[in-house]
Each structure stands twice: as C-alpha cells, then as structure tokens.
Length: 176
Image 1 (cartoon, rainbow, N blue to C red):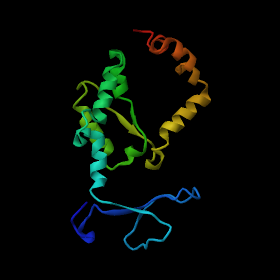
Image 2: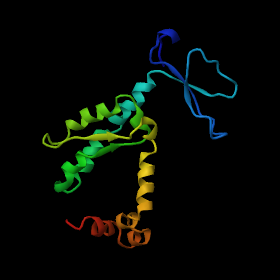
Image 3: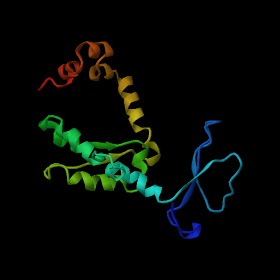
Image 4: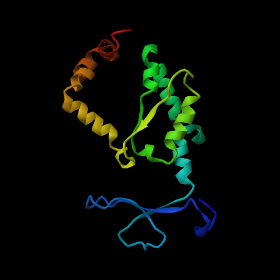
C-alpha cells in the first residue's frame, strides 16, 4: 500500500467493478469528482498497477522458479522444428486482457529480442483495437470452426485416448 497521501500518489486510481447483474454495467475508472453510490464496489489500485503486470515477465518476484512470458515464448519456439522457428517469431499475436497493459508489447519485444537468434525477424502484432484484444483468440477460433478447417487441425478425444501424444505426432508432425 502506498504511504503517499491520495493527492500526491500519481499511481492511485479507483476502479468501479462491473455489476454482472444486468450484464450492461461495465467496470470503469472513477474520476476524482465522481461520488460512490451504494450499489458500486470500488477497487483502489496503486503500485499494484505496476507490480501485477511485472509478474508476467518476472515470476521470480513471487519466488516462482519459472521464466516469464518471453521465456515461455522462446522455449515454445525452440521446441518446434528449426525450419519454422523464424516464421513463428515473425508472426506473434498478442491477445487477451493482459495485452492491454500499457507498454506490454514494447516490454515483450525487448525481453524476447534477447532470447531469440539475432538473424530472426521479430514481429509482434496486436488486435486492431485495444478493446478487441480480449476477444481476439475467441474470434479466431470461431472463424476456424466456421471455415470447416477445424477437423483438419484437431484430434478427437477418442483418438487421443487411444494413442495419446502419438496421435498428435502422426497428424501434425509428419515431417519428423
């Protein structure tokens, strides 16, 4: 908790939580002049606005012995066939609510650049609008199912239960 008075703490903001009762009242940042009503729940944020997003990049802050998001991406790419690694790094798409954090894309580029080969082009794309970022993955999956391509890129539960990971290897990693 910040020890600075309300008026001097530039990080402090009050967030009015969504009600979820009517499905229409969205969460929003409360201005300093707004009064709180009885039906509002207000979450006061200060340095958490910086430390929580930082955990995505440095989980060791909490004592977790694992890499952050940049390390997870780099390891995922390294686990793929060498012929497609450069292609994957040049086509990273940021999606989800966390991608809305200020400076998220720039920080990811900086951290990831240090972990991938220098001859790989690093290209990170975000949703067209920041409001859309939290729905991008869902919309992409929905489009894939509608296109009829889903069955080409999926393994049935029955097949997986019968063959395990070999079912995936046979279908997707034919070049190995």
